Length: 281
Ligand code: PAF
Picture: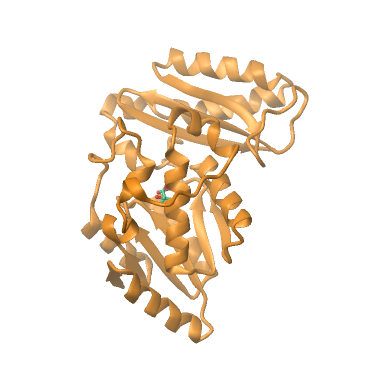
């Protein structure tokens, strides 16, 4: 596996593959890779001849009080995991490569509507940072397809929207959530959890399953949301939201709507913010 830090060698390699009629899959990441990322790479490898993975901790998607400086960085371990799984090329750019005018002076890609709710409400500006860096990465890599995890459900919707709206010539693929045996969705941030918190964390997934069952039993989404919030609080978490939304556009469903829904939770457990979701029906 090659590792490159600049755009020119990345483009040269991708151009050579595409020139031979070979397809390129892309998996953007912020590094600190785990089994969840591995499953994204495997999906890309199953659908494309070559796979490029980027590792870039993107400063513009972190708020001022968020964990940008302490976000775990582990490039050597990431390289080992990626070459083990069969990735062809790792792109690990510096901030100056991604933001030549500086991260505070970048042109910004803003996706409307979708980005002002849920994560957008609790992390203002987050999705501008995500949309901007994803757009840049797609222009740099020029893949045929790009894989995004369904764990960041709203991010996936934002990316689908921007690709459609800006006519980017890439197919977006959603990869299923990878979970630990007890149901906790895998995330780089799980390593912030203490042993006691880690033991309590599966309650997020359990609550999503409970939300699904409550809806199936005929309860209205608003009732389910209140009950889920109470359940999380009783388990010692501080929920930002526990909601049922339309899976297509994250709109609020009618009381009787049951098809094409998704349950989403964001909750604090100690210093760690966990997010998870479950598509329903
Ligand atoms: O999901 C992530 O790891 C990041 O938000 C992404 C898509 C790599 C953009 O920085």
